[in-house]
Image (cartoon, rainbow, N blue to C red; front, side, top):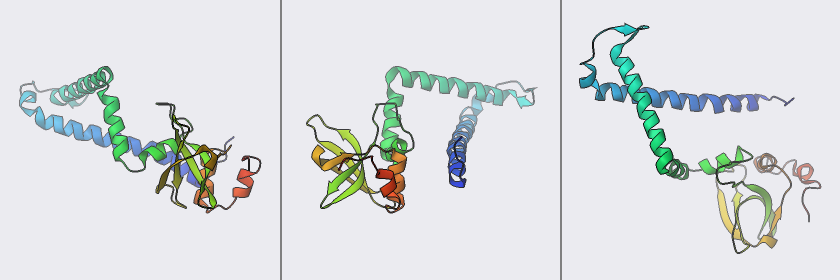
Length: 192
């Protein structure tokens, strides 16, 4: 069984609560907007309730559901939805990094950050291979310590990079803990 820590439980809760709050906020905002926008049409409906919900609100709920399905269908058929989400992901700083780091497989493009050590100046730095180019060069992200959200992107020769047989979580832990425990984490997992 997985060992539970306070931080792990908090993060799992945050991953659940935050999207839920965002979803509820968006739906309630959309409902309020539609209620105002459809007011002239809603006034034409007869008075009355079903299970305590009045007819105008039922009409707005039905219209909202139809609108969401229509948007989903249009997004799937035209590819607009994927392009829109992709654009939003690139506009939010650090989102793509966290998306890759928090999941072992992203699935969408098969892209996955691979932990490595990159030779910069005279030292080996914890890094992540972002992409392998057609010419054999590697696109490498070298995060800062202890904050992994800022760093530099290098295009490097494969000879200047040592791939690590560790998880992204272990690499991030070494970075965020200023290297403490790295000896144990790398023992037998990198060829020098």
